[in-house]
Structure formats: structure tokens, C-alpha cells
Image (cartoon, rainbow, N blue to C red):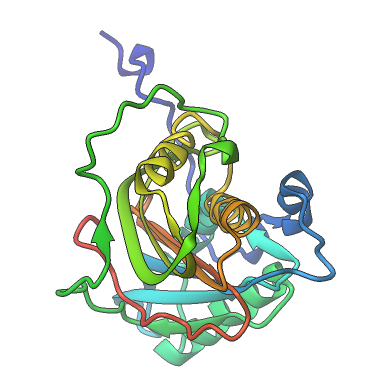
Length: 270
């Protein structure tokens, strides 16, 4: 059989020289309009933390250098950066010479900041894998589920007479990329203070994203918005840790203003 006839995709001509124009910014307002958010008065703070596992360039003598990196894009930036374009952009460094490592870091920071429309922090290295997780998983609940899309906020429920502070998590969140259709897998961590969430209802709600097509960042904003509207917590933090694809993973975090940003970390699946 001719390899060209196999259903494995087609050859992709990856960039051979550095090219900042490969970055594809997408207005956050497009997704936020669908959720019903007022972009002029967002109800949350947050950041999108990217981990890059496949970064390489040539030094001044032409010798390859390799590194990992962490990018932090503020949630208030007017644009998000489409993940495949970010992968292609980082690959454009592979055969390009730079005077030193600091020049590479500064170049990436400048290009991502320009694409996002706000300052983006760039650092070499990755946060550690979390050894201890203080959250309580709801995945073992014995729950019958039959809704897999679109996301259904009406599934959410809480006990208004019982005010608690707790951190819940689920590794069953799945959605689909609206550009490529590929599956996006994540563990989500929800920390809140307010009426006690119905855990079975929460799990049904999270699984209702399973056939939904939306960017990672927008899924997290939708979850935050639905929880805030349906359960009215006094404080809320939502973080999703997506598994990597194409050498990248993304970890969007949204929270009520005044919430302390969670420590950067990675899951074993990442």
C-alpha cells in the first residue's frame, strides 16, 4: 500500500526558519459572547499557563539547543493564541541561530505578547509534577450519565442551606478542538466557598462537555460562569490541566477577583 493512501493524515511542511507570523490570535470576545460574558466587566481573574516540551534552536555556532518552557498568558488579554499555530511557531526556531538563550526567551515573550495583546511571561523550565493533591475526586461516584453535549448548566445543583469550603476534582473532562476536531482531555479542579455542590450533578455536568467543540480557555470560562450563575458561590476557582498535544499542554485558570492564584504544577498525565 502506498503510504499516501493511508488514513494517517498528510505530510506537513513544517517551517524551516523563524517566523512570528505563524502565530494565529483569536479574539476572546468571540467565545465570551457565546457564553454571555460582558468583556468590559469580566467576573473573573485568571491566566492561561502553557507548558512547552519540545523547544529547540541553534546556538551561534550552529549547535542545537533544547529546552522546555512555561508561558503565562493573562486572561484579560484580548486574544488567545491557537494551539496548532503556537506549535508551528515554536518549530520555526529549530533551524534558526540565536546568539544566546536569553535572546530566544525574549523573542518568544515579545512575539506572544504581540499576538495576545498583553504582556506574556516566558520562562525556561516546567513546574514540578504535584506529589500531593488536596482535592477530592468525584470520579468514583456511582452515577448514571446519558448527556454528552452540548454542556447543560441545568444539571448543576447545590444545597443553599449548607455552606462549605472544599476543593473537588475530576479527570473525566473531555471536549473537542473546534479547529481540528481532536479530543482534548483534562483534569479539572474546582475550589469554592458557598452552598454545597451536588457532586453527582456536578459530574453529570462536566461529562456533558464530552462531545462539545470549544477551545480549552472557553470551556473553563463556561464552567466558571455556569457554576457562578447556578450555585452562587461566595468564592470560586476553576483550573483545568489539559494533557499535551503536539508538545504543548495548557492550563487555564479562572477565579473570583481576590482569589490567590494556585501554585503552578503539573499532573502525572501531562
